[in-house]
Length: 191
Image 1 (cartoon, rainbow, N blue to C red):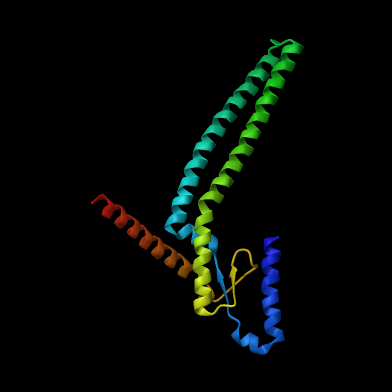
Image 2 (cartoon, one colour):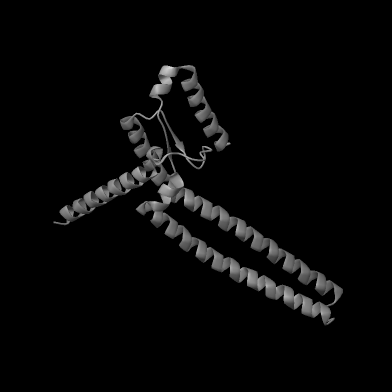
């Protein structure tokens, strides 16, 4: 759906410039790779590291549950092969195994949901700040349209029309400035 929306926006801009040659001369289009920008800003790196730690913790929990399930299955198979279980006990053990399997699947789905929510929470403010930076760049440099490179069907663009490095640099510079101001304010309050 996003791809269609971006493609339609791009097509509309190109059609408008084809219809009105004077507008075409004034049309400036640029691209930005927000995913790369997210990965290369300091805040983006910190968010990615937090998500990675959360993923590792959750993966460890899933691995433990999966190992427990595997042992349960092996034990049931041994008991069935050894003829130790009555038909009723065998059925009960199989149901216990199936219940544990469903719980593992539910846990996996819950962890996936939790990771997605956490990622959205951690990246929302970063993306909002990047959009503000892009808006300022677009207005200052007279761009008609700035397209997200990964969602707009962009296959190639000259480097002078790719704003990604500029967004990363501006974001990190502004972030550093605001961090310094915050630390100065804290130190002046302590005096």
